[in-house]
Length: 137
Image (cartoon, rainbow, N blue to C red; front, side, top):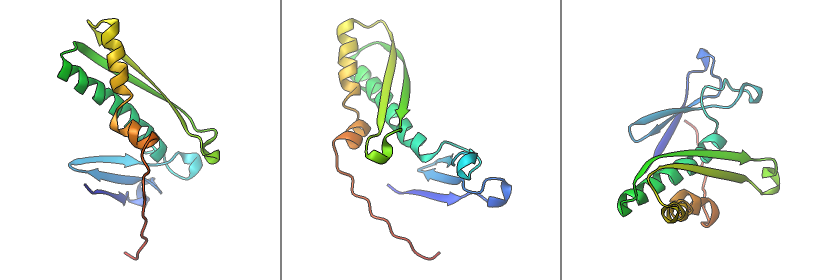
């Protein structure tokens, strides 16, 4: 899969904002004004953190559907502590609030499933190799 990004027109008050194209979806990412942007969308850290929250919620819903666990809703909160990022520690705390007519045992089962979401694994257990090429347009 390929994701493409293009800078939004700088003349419209968004000096740094990027439009992301993912399959048929478009999103905008930017940085806050104090970092030189216009806060036209979530910054890259926000997107990274949100990917974890979305993956956990989707994994729980997928697992519940597969196992016939009657989950009515999943609300997810991701809290970031980036205070030690420069020292190599980036902390994310996720909290899933699950509603439905479920037992304590099913809730524990869903907690286990949430801990196995693919993005969690990518962030915590996998070595990601990144290559970057810069070329003239």
